[in-house]
Length: 459
Ligand code: ADP
Image (tube, rainbow, N blue to C red):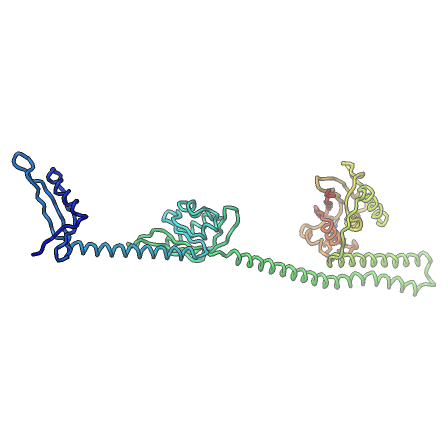
């Protein structure tokens, strides 16, 4: 006969169930193992209930045991499977986590509301913000152009993904990282979009090399342009210089030829006149050569700036005198000094300074009628001493105002007034070299003012 027994460790519990029922406390579905004397293991489901008589007094206990061995077997099997599944899922999630962390690129998951739900180490590094602080915040906060970042996110949301979207991430210490942003939506098992998975590729180095390349290209382009300008200048020089030299040379030739031919018949005064003419033309050619040499120096960067402290009054008065005496005109050149600056000093390279103001003042004289005075005015600003030269002469046509600073360019209204078109280009180079500024105001037929701002000495 098959006998069953309850093992030691369950005996007390089963007894308790039955005792409780005797006291009126029933137990449902108490599971315990039974062993048969043949060593078989049976699982029992015990339900205990209290028996009472009509008066409601407890008369006994009804215990119903049900063999659930097979059921429990199924259940255990199921539990084991669930446990194995859970373990696998856990392993898979750990695996994808390490995959995400293995990427140096910043990776984030963003909810449908644009809130960061998870980040990897790369995101922490690039923003300088801790994981807990990143999660739960608006992802667009971390870009220099949040609107652009939002638009990229929106695009991923609408199209399912976005590729190589250029953005810039700002680290909390201000450092910027240029990235290409790639994002795809992720969904639940029913296909509803849960959010966006985004990866950013750092392209800062690429961008910086591109910028360097662009800079280099621009430098090369500018060097090429300079070379081209220089070439144009040279050809303009050849045509102008040959013309400019030819005119005085034929005048000299003509004067010398007349003297030679009519020597015996000429009155001394006539000979003297012709000799004066020759002298003048030689002088003009010398000036022309000097100017050409200066322009050449300026163009090849050979003009040097060695500033000295000079008395402003002496400096400008000497130049005015010289221009006055070398001009054939008896024109008044008036110095206006309302701020009493004559006794102050300026800090300027004497040679460059002379070049600037000799040219400007002699132009003012040259391009205005005899009876109209020329004024040279001194004034001062916080960081500059200003010298302006004003005349009431022919003026410069508006359309030519920019060009007149180029070598060999002369105004269309100069008529027979002599010149080479080199003076102003020398002035411009010299003003640049002394670190000053040059302005011109002019109205054709009314007059012209050139303003030169000379930097004060920085102590
Ligand atoms: P140049 O005096 O030998 O012609 P510049 O280079 O000094 O050459 O001047 C270039 C041109 O600018 C002049 O030919 C003239 O057309 C114009 N210009 C310069 N200064 C004046 C001025 N004060 N009034 C009118 N035109 C001027």
